[in-house]
Amino acid sequence: MDFWKVSMLAAALCALVLPKNLHAEMEYPPTSRVIHGDQSIDLKFTGATRRQILVVKVYEMAHYMDCQHSAYEAIPLEEIFSSEIPKQIRMQFLRDLPQEKVHAELRKSIIRNSKEEWIQAAGSSVDDFFAAIDRDGKKDDTFVINWMPGGKIVAYYNGELSLEIDNMYFAKMLWSIWFGDKPVVRRDRLVEEILAQP
Image 1 (tube, helix red, strand yellow):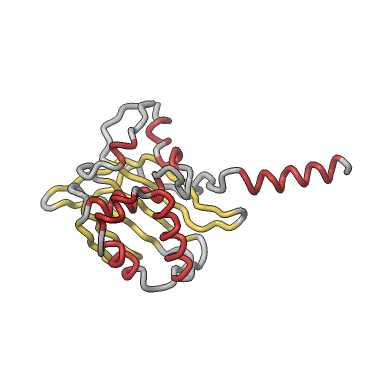
Image 2 (tube, rainbow, N blue to C red):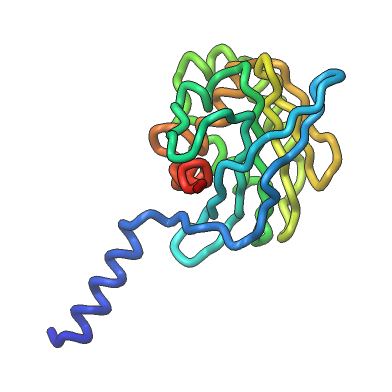
């Protein structure tokens, strides 16, 4: 086998085994304001990444958090999963996504990453979540998920309220998709903006 064929084979193998999640290309504001009761909370941009499977770009996402950490200080996972710290995930689809495929990927990701006790304690909230995803996703659609103090999830699809679930175990289960042990994206990139601050 000549050098060219060996090089092509190595590149193909790398495409299969290396992480499929690349840096986000979109620009995100440094803060995102959420309303909790009569209180306004400015969440800090902590990082962004892209979900990509081989060459297929699925969505971009950014993570925001009420974060008091100084530069170069890592955010402990315990804080990311804390029910009392408000957080936000902002997603934008990069391609059309059939409803059934969205459901299938989410279910698989939850099973791979969530603790079993979180799924059990989330109860009917899991069914409510999937019922709220009631249409195909279209390229450039947006999905914003707010984790409010106490563990309440408030989600907006294309700017319209689509879901409210007040269950901190459901919130932990949902965030585990991106921050669990086998996340669907590079979770380090969702907090790297904090680490990169001068």
